[in-house]
Length: 337
Image 1 (cartoon, rainbow, N blue to C red):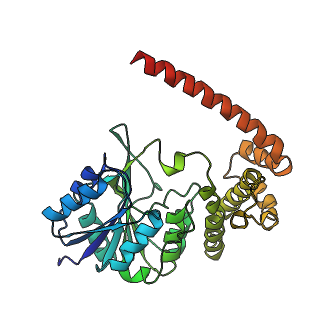
Image 2 (tube, one colour; image 1 turned 180 degrees about the horizontal axis):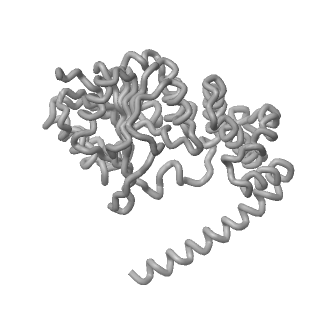
Image 3 (cartoon, rainbow, N blue to C red; image 1 turned 120 degrees about the vertical axis):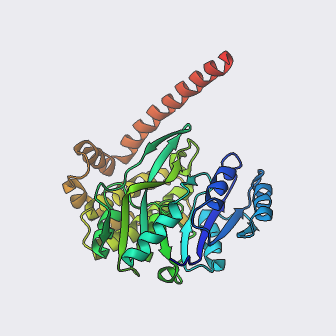
């Protein structure tokens, strides 16, 4: 089978401890016809030096150094210069198995799919455990089936990094640079609208996802997180369009975020962060009927809906105590080293 060009886009920001392993895993793929695009998004550590070093020893590598504007900006830059027939995104703190691109490509060609998907491993403290998307046999999926899996409960299929895309289905679609949470899921949902066939390889765990305590998903509240409101509104549109089973789960998450962020922003007078709270009120009944969400969470939603200051005020007091205890424990541990 003739190898067509695959563009591998790697956004990079301050990951010097992990970058070499990531790049080694890409350049040592059994699939050789690659265009490897490294987007250094204004890193202030040794990442720029590492990128340039790899570019000198592998002619397939292109390095772009740019000002820091976030991962969506970096990915968009990569899409603008990508020339391959296929595109894949790899996170720079992760690494991939040697046969990942070859298997994804073969699966795509054999099934005439527009998006080829593989399973993954979770890596934490150098210990690897098999992750799991949806437990189904290797399967060719219709558009409706794909959207159902994409939005299934906690969005298990919404990862960007385990998917090979045909370049033509992306066309002019780009990442929304104003969305900082769930931006991957929004992008995939928009691209899938241009697709007809999808293939999911459940048996092959080919991507190694590194879990880090300082990742964006584990960070404390900041204003960028409010963009999840916009993301969930877009996601809900596609869920309704394709009659997804998890539509009420998305409504629950959207209403919860709306309540929470309205509470967090009550003292911030900034038009960029205003939330149309009333727009999401209509989702309360559907959210309460949503049996996919635990009853205790639905009860908490009701309390937060009617008494947000009470609910979140109590929670914040509790978390502040937890933080104080954690700092005390860490201080004790540091003195014992």
